[in-house]
Length: 232
Ligand code: C5P
Image (cartoon, rainbow, N blue to C red; front, side, top):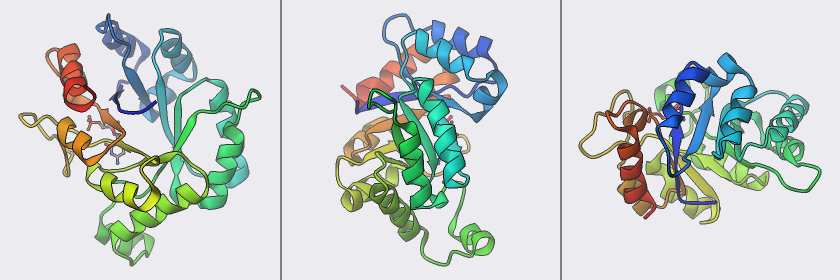
């Protein structure tokens, strides 16, 4: 695995998702399934997309007591997903237990990555709501380092943080980065963005791209443009 474009399939039904994926006749894109689709359709949507030959990043961002997360991860692991995630804020112990839960009987497991601070959290809300008074960059790097200590495979982060994460945690520690936009595209609600080519240059391992592909007039062409800029 490594250096790929993951399409965020932020649809609210199986029908819309499969209709979208039907457009891709050659290459089978790596797909991200988030809370909306998973809660609407249940685990069966994961099985169906997997059966069509796609790799899956199941973006459910678990955060609970270690034992509960371990058991939940064990269930997700049986769905044969390729990447799962959780909140690093759940502590090193929670991340360790999550890893243990993911391990399958044959010794394989999905990759496990951590969300550090959500990009919707800024310095002000972190200080006011969470009573965390350190600079946000320091908090993000501390959480990434905790994920590394716990044995995780990487983090979800802004492409702007990917270079620093690799400096702190090593170049093999995966950076999975949303917030990607084409140079001539609409930013939407994403504030800190990078193009696929810039994300490649800074060393992101995977880019997560939603609306620039899903809302494009020609989604397959938009996906191929991401592949050309980021992978080829
Ligand atoms: O449509 P867009 O390209 O903005 O989609 C980005 C995807 O990545 C969405 O599914 C969004 O929830 C997710 N994401 C994000 N920023 C984060 C974490 C996840 O945009 N910090």
